[in-house]
Image (tube, rainbow, N blue to C red; front, side, top):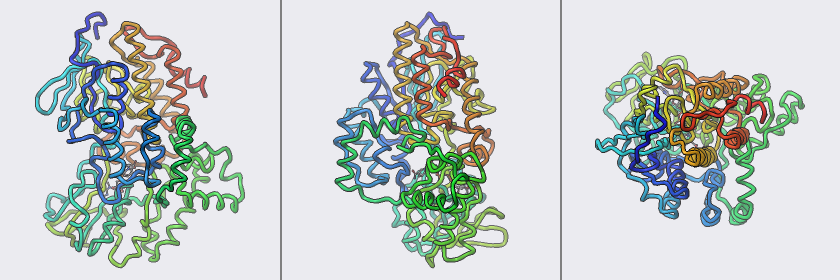
Length: 553
Ligand code: NAP
């Protein structure tokens, strides 16, 4: 047990992992509070996910005007997005601009991976060890390491036999030209695969897409932002941000109040057409209130999208293979540009792995049963070890709880997706069981950093330098996240949302799906009541959060 009376002076107040959206805002916030800050980033520069995911076609599926910081009016006035969904390079330029504009780079050391972090209970400090062997001590440890930053292991059988070019979307290190004139395989048809497939098809001699589970690909309807639209956004930013903060998904999507099964088929179709035309359906719950809770209602929308697939893809057999069979939106839908049309090209073919997986590979071929596909290059778009992957990689340890892996052996347990019992002064920005998974993550990041900063300031004012959630409050939050997701169709479908994409990973749902607005009100109320469920300097305030959740409902 931590001794609440014997603090030692740390090297810095805050040690932070990562220089993406989370770490940069944490550095800004720490400077604002007058706290010393040391950030460590594996990459040679800022950007996080937008530094690494440079594959062709990479862009955000949240509109850029919303997928951006709200903390500075000057910043949002001076930065102009060129497209509705900005490409990776533009998002990275924006992040670089923020780092320069607020002089944040000086708080970080790049090319420095945090290899381990251990809590020193007698000194009330975290000691982090870098991959260089150097150590650094901070009072508070912030994980801004991202939810989708650790690539999944290359669990494709026989990959080690293949001697051609292999590249992963999440660590893209070639140019699109390197695939020109080649026989290319893309394995994986999630958001990353869906974005790069049309562009690879344009340069490859032949592209074979290896698809295990077809996903819903909705037309992104990306377009340049006109000067008028930009002006209107800039003159309304405060209201737009406010709407995002209190919305279900961190974008201005008001929850629908009527149900799909209560309106006529004609009305449903009209609404679905409208949503499809404006690239809707990503926040599927915004179209009708029952789409994410009632399988029959969902089927009406799912079938509408399948019909679009059949209308677009000329070969009926290929179209049938591309039709998803799980509820629309129950795992992250993809935003695509010309995705289904790509399968009409003569140089593109689709191989379904649904009934027969890849058997093995040879030096130049992918083998499935008795079939062999000769390829020169393999693009792996197989996803991430979401949320727990990046956190476990930090090798966070406390004498009381052991490692995070041990503490979460049966599944993730957190307090608001921000803290976890047994790990004092350890804060996860947009962590598992926060709304990060099903929201515009920048909204969740800013809110989490603000909340963490307020909590630390509150603790400092009380003279308590050790902050830790109680197990009781944590169990309340776990129950709330489970009860919330169990009312939805998210609970029914395997994906990275549930950890089921990684062999051996416990399948617990990795997010809170009650909406960013409700979560924000809940966190604010917890702050107002003196942080119930959090032990500060050994003292905890009752009641725990289950009651607050019921009160704000
Ligand atoms: P993903 O959604 O997990 O998709 C991975 C794909 O690879 C799936 O089709 C999966 O099939 C397949 N796969 C995995 N292992 C395989 C194996 N051993 N053999 C054959 N196929 C295999 O990963 P992602 O596409 O990188 O996207 C992850 C998340 O990142 C997205 O959901 C999104 O939140 C975010 N993202 C967003 C954007 C954007 O903003 N537009 C772009 C990229 C990523 P199964 O489904 O059968 O497992």
